[in-house]
Length: 188
Image (tube, rainbow, N blue to C red):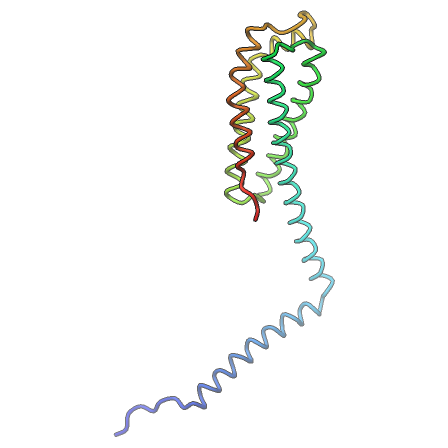
């Protein structure tokens, strides 16, 4: 009695030839589909590239807005510390501050909704925007003084004690935001 017959070399070679032909056929099928409707394939590819470019541009805009906001928040803190709280001095800075925070919040919403940020960047942006919100909450404590000076014009300048106290609370938050921006993950 002889044992089971081992597969011949010819069978293995034939099996390999079928696999190679199968891969070749798959590649040819994909090429044929692309050639069958090249305009659709090209449009899909172009849309994907445009979407990636737009997401990258939105991320750059958000990072620039965060950086600008850190600068403006530092400027507000410096004006409050120095007692430069008249309508002529602080008024234009507050307008820039309000525009800046509106831009940051808008771009933050777009970035989070699009899902374009990778996990590390998303987390870093969430921390930075949380600090932006903390800065805003501290500054809002001085709203009564700022409204009296800039809107109602019932005062020439903000109460120096209140302005200095707010400035002291802002300083560590501004430094924290600057550090968070400096340490944002980079795309390499």
